[in-house]
Length: 371
Image 1 (spheres, rainbow, N blue to C red):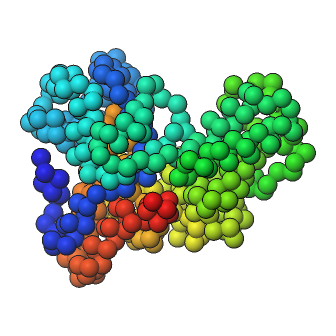
Image 2: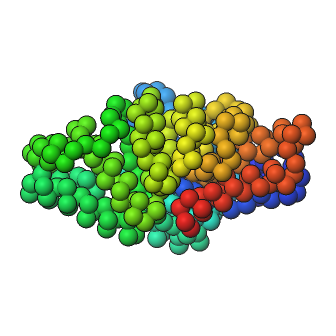
Image 3: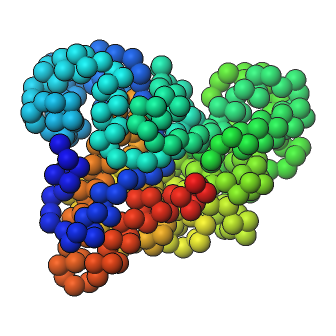
């Protein structure tokens, strides 16, 4: 299947080429390199990451239907084949060939791989490069670095210095930091004394998830300080009900440093407003069309609310290569529909539409991540 065959509308040649141009995937998570059982595959194609209730299947979801419609032809099958046929073909080809076909069909020229979360047997970034012929860069998770420091530190004082050293080491090889914002947090930088006291408590249970509000604030500021030294972006995963008031305060406090901040996850109206308000704030938009009834309407809303130079494509691919392929496909289809509406209404010119497609698809990420 040719990539152009998946677009739902006719577009002028220049716009069509821009929509289908290779993407920079700034929000990619490692995919599995082993052969997957049906049960494991089904958990990887949904956000639930859990088995379907007894007597049901995750193939009876929008993601499941999309896999059978859009991924089946990439593996040499007819669209809409039964799940058993799709999975049999997947097993016949083997994980390496499946990953190679799906990632190449996504037409992605660079993957920025988020290593911030553990996953079973992920495919290393260098292997992704060999499979797809694309470049790859690491997005380092600060929570993982903090836990390693908490395990090895001998005191609250050494915790502070060890964390600084660990983040500096990550900066030397990563293209960005990533962190998950707590649902409730204070944007102010905590005092050194408060951090030392909290760190001493943390050392008593270093393998537990970090929940102390003082250390969470300290980690955010420490990561921001380290990124500032090299001008790297800091990415924040927003909870479903984001802490927008505290986040706005934090963004206001960090605006003067000019470090790019990229918002991932729950892009409600408040989050989009932050991107439109603060000059150093950007948003990930790639996963939006995949979770909306109408991709064109979802992308159109982004084009109305967020400056074009603030939007970054990210597939959100994780676990199964199908998720990356579908992320790219849904984004292109949604963008094509949104641009077609504006062109038909005479609101945009052909050069403007092509320029925006290239900005969001790759140009903004190259600028923000210094690729």
